[in-house]
Image 1 (cartoon, rainbow, N blue to C red):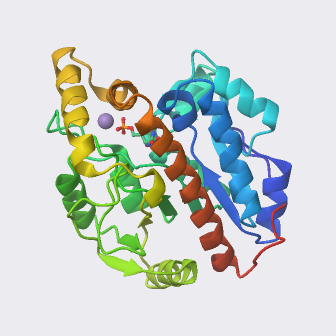
Image 2: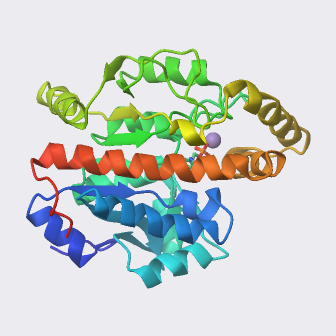
Amino acid sequence: MKHPHMQIAPEVRIALDLNAPIVALESTVVTHGLPRPQNLELAREMEKTVREAGATPATIALLDGQIRVGLSDEELARLAESESALKVSHRDFAAAIVKKANGGTTVAGTMYAANMAGIKVFATGGIGGVHKESAFDISTDLRSLAEIPTIVVCAGAKAILDLPATLEVLETLGVPVVGFQTDEFPAFYSRESGLGVSVRLDTPKEVADFAKAHWELGMKGGVLVANPIPAADAIPAAEMEPFIAQASAEALERGIHGQKLTPFLLERISELTKGKSLKANLALLLNNASLAAQIASELTGKKKGWAI
Ligand code: PSU
Ligand code: MN
């Protein structure tokens, strides 16, 4: 059945039909989160990492006003090089469609499209959350996690956010926060935050079984899996804190808010840390792609050799 606004790549279609493991990948990180040329390199590495771990990657984005689930290498390059790509969250799909635009999907946008396509597992870097600068800037990622039944693997919420407030909202919304091999909610660039998770699980199989139980109970929403950045690439929270504070103060001073705030902060922090935060960002993204593929394998019961 052909959807008027969504196109599923042939290999993703085959994987869906075989109930083979699939990992959805977001694309705001490609269009707005990372500088060129690291964005395209990262997008390719994410796909490769998923394949090597035995699953089929499905990068989700908009091209010429079509929601695309799975991109060819040439399409990935077109997206990464697109100057005018929109940042497409939950409410922006129809706008991108009527404008025939290219767009990178946020966590919320990617969850929505993945669920439309029937994909259950999704890897990102850090989810959006409650911003420090403005009481009402709460990412729609949080509401999407409450409403869309997808396993989202992240390295915590972005460190630029108000993490205690973000965790409170997730609790209110009934979203389980799984610490993968940790009791602490990781803080994106750092492994530690001093904040707890709702459950610690230690293997991909436990995570898959947890999600199955959650959904067998009739729960409608997602499961957030917080996977700490590899120790070798982590930056201690105390070291990051002054840079985050400085970037946040500059954003406030310059009146940067809404959709532009997150990209501004990430870029500024990368400058302030002389690229160290960028390197950490890339490392945690790949680490999450690998774990997501293992969880997808456990969820489908099909391991290794099932990448289409
Ligand atoms: N994590 C990153 N880089 C990013 C993002 C997350 O390492 O670019 C993106 C995600 O797509 C997330 C979005 O959904 O930022 C959140 O934006 P906002 O705070 O405007 O909701
Ligand atoms: Mn926001």
